[in-house]
Image (cartoon, one colour):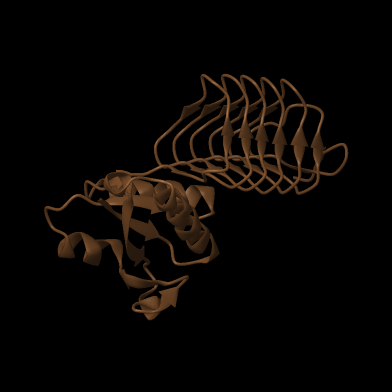
Length: 216
């Protein structure tokens, strides 16, 4: 069994625990994860329990405790920029990023998933979809054929990314939003919940509505 730490003792952290438990339930003992608890910089959370597991300290404290031992991690921080910064910090400790994929996820052939990414229950990935590193794909998301999700992007529950779309680094697609085929969502752009994107969105823009219009 491999030791794994969930970084971030919040709501997304509890979802990560749920997915890990489901993965363990359907795996052989040698392939299961040993969930040792949460890492969190908020010292007031230390020793508190969240979804059956305790906060055991900051990443630095945990690294010192397991000095020389192999540690895997999943960064359960929703903010894309902060997640990027925290992952960079954790990699300096030599920790390894784990992919969390709920067993109910449906994959076509030729799908690529980068390290540290998360795919929630009920999601579907169509042929030739590419998912980069530390991407969050939440529950009931559909990824069309040949779509590309770059590193640290995030798709909220129910989002629909149609064929040949590109979601660039750090972009966020809100719950139940849809992106029509072949469109690009630029780096750090935000698509509001329930929006429909009918034209590409430039880097840093925020769009909302049906059809999605620029807010800023």
